[in-house]
Amino acid sequence: MSTYREPAPAPTAPEAALSAAALRVAFPGSRGHAGARAVDGVNLDVGRGEIVALVGESGCGKTTLARALLGLQRPTSGTVRFHGRPLAATTRHLRAYRRRVQFVLQDPHGSLNPRHTVYDAVAEGLRIHYGTTADETEQVAAALSRAGLRPPERFFLAYPHELSGGQRQRVVIAGALVLHPELIVADEPVASLDASVRGEILQLLLRLRDELELAALVVTHDLGLAWNIADRVAVMYLGRVVEVGPVEEVLTAARHPYTRALLSVLPESGAAEPTVLAGEPPDPARVPGGCRFHPRCPALASGMADRAGVAQRCRTEEPAIAPGGSTPHIACHLFPAE
Image (tube, rainbow, N blue to C red; front, side):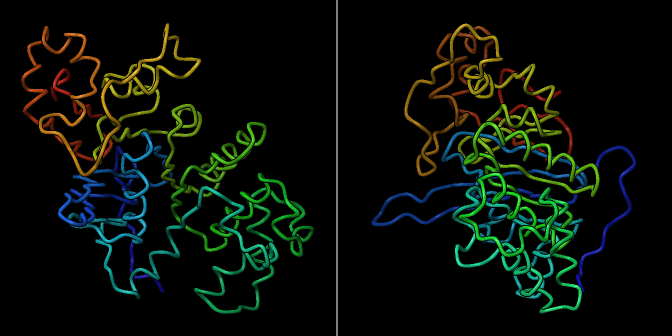
């Protein structure tokens, strides 16, 4: 029996199903080298029935943040809350939590045991949490059906190598759904799939949100995916969320120079040419002073920040951290908080 209880719904904003407050994850260095600040002060909420896309370059900390939210990585400091209650590190609390928050991995081929049938792959979570139950077959069939594998009995005795990539991803999703979660964390859920089936998986996630009020945090480097699936988007750079807001607002009128640079590579962006970021890729062991993006910032390099009178602040003063909740935020001195 889970120890969590849902509070009354908020009157204006989605209830915060999962939230991070001042979350930090640091990894110690070796042989005198500085440690890596993989997640460096993140406030982020995922509302009930809401899909939030967490986007950014490889190495920005988004997967580490996802693992901390799942209880798979212990934070250095800060708090993870589920329906307002702090996530405890005890086995009993984590076990109850993981029935209600499920992880969908990037590579369905690698995450499925090649020696297990589809039936066993989907039933595994049930057996771990509840043991063998009288209605196991019924629950496995229902989960496969919800994931779009119909008739489900046709897939019971199939092995992963006998399925297409899209079907394997649906089996992984069914393995999460069989526990009736309230939220899933999906790490690049369509990155390994052909373009022809990516849209089908995205439509499945949207249908699950609508039919089951299933919330999701979708971790991706693909802003095009975020546009197609998310209600809100949080853009992460070097361990921090630098821009967050409704997906239409962020992706059609991005203000942070980093978000603009990411968007410029999309064919539909309308940019004359992609923005090429100067300097070295971000290194979480060498976070610069001031705005952490300033060594690569096109607004600083072009003189825009100087003309706005904020160039010195960019080099010496860290912008305010995104506060969490549903309030849009831009961590940039060009756009001071109102």
